[in-house]
Image (cartoon, rainbow, N blue to C red):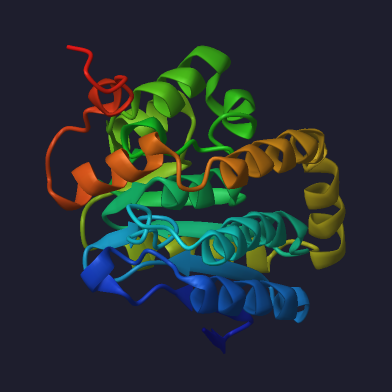
Length: 255
């Protein structure tokens, strides 16, 4: 995290895992968002050709329930911190925004992406479910049918497709992301901080209405830690193969 010119910039720098965040990274982002009340805006971006792959869940094939519980609950605190931040939060996307990374985009006030960027959820494909934005708030942003398509089917969408459906605000040529973000920040600089905050608080109506649903979904995920589907989805992901969920659920001795 760095602050300059009235802007707090949060950069995810774990390119070897596509900037998936662990517990320490999530807590650091939360702290940065909480400390941004005196700034003009916050920018969240990735590194190494990716935006964010969500929570670092490499241990799902042999999960530690307490560690996963902490990461799941902290993920909810993270997306809520984006919404509770009194300043506009911009997702500056260059590369893949997948799983919880896509839900960070959903949570942000604005999103700007390069042409090479992609968006989508991974939940049911890897033995999880995207309950922190994609199954609830996204329906307001992109429509219920599109939201279910994204959440259930785990398809990938290009930046142009994401723009057309209303997930992001602008698509720019590769290499021009910083310039585009600078334009948005310059516009924000001309606006009243006090009334921007009031507008943001008011705009959170649908987010606030979704929070109970997110908490219930999170509790369901916690109860499902260590399930057959979770283990099979994670193992298949690590082995770069298609998951065999129905085979994993077959009773012993049955064809």
